[in-house]
Length: 231
Image (cartoon, rainbow, N blue to C red; front, side):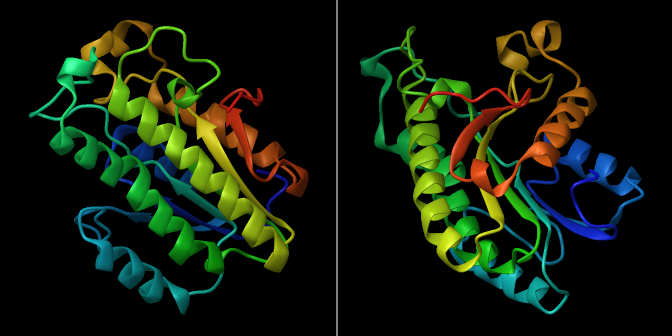
């Protein structure tokens, strides 16, 4: 992380998940990183995408500690005990659409609102974990309606926020980041254990990509290997 200042501060939202935990661990092990804060439903301060007020409250609680050089949202949902990704139009329901959008879109949108003002003015990156299946242009197989749509909407919110934030903080970089297939709870029902990379490797790759970003990259959709993805 040599493009970040010595003693940089990092924040990981969704730090209780497999990818989030790996982000926290690798950043804690980085000698240039002075502090890593992980937020989740049971952290202090608490941040829960099912509780809108908790997002603002967490940001306010951290404001006094200073600016952040790296903010990563690693929270997301593809399936729960109550639903799996929809395979056809006949599977669509308000309940699943709303639950998926709440975690994948609405929560991250409020992260943009409340945490973008906490970005350092000299060097900072805010990354929202998205997914290649959220690319409209790249959609060739169909299915996974809620998940695809929630990530496509997330990408639009990120792009729009990047334009606004650039006016007040031109050095800040806001990106949608595709992690690739990772061996995690999210991918487990879809052969993630066989085809996915270990979370530590995936996060190492993503951190290398985030380290390479410049202000010219703000408002883009990038993959873990730095490839630019179509919207």
